Length: 202
Image (cartoon, rainbow, N blue to C red; front, side, top):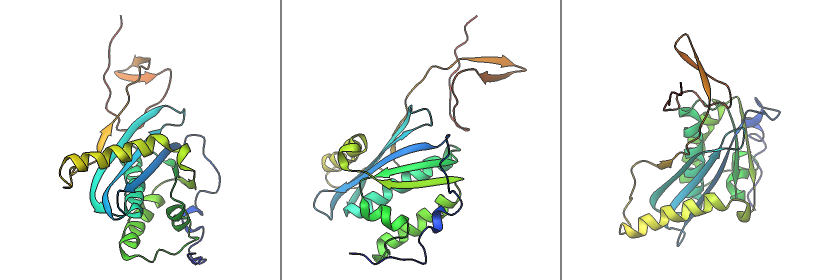
């Protein structure tokens, strides 16, 4: 069992003691076939209303399960940063990573320590962050994406197939009213920086 790191426990959560209704949810998963072996991660992100807004996945080359799990976490945190998300709930089936991020376990492996240290400042930029463990059967979409990423690596002959994550965003019809040249939504919200198309109905 990994020892508890009491000096860091709760450190990342001190600034966000209570849930926020506007929080996005990121289901993340990472895996490696062989451990180490061909590795990849998958991330499914929903907005505060429960609508799927993005799927992220990437083939990572030859790495361990834990490395892939951390890369999934980093992908979710970067998505939040790039899309103006201020509150994020992360759900992962990696109990080790969740406990390390909470400060319950120390991060001893040098490679994981580097990823852990990369994640911490991204967490601090959020107004609210929480992370919890869930069994794999409750994380099926992220698991599917992680396996698809590993499959892409296999079809690519084991090379690092993607330089950047594969992202697929869902489309959604919203209604709005133009006032002084600015579209004001009347149903739903979108994060700052989201690319949209406007269809005019007269």
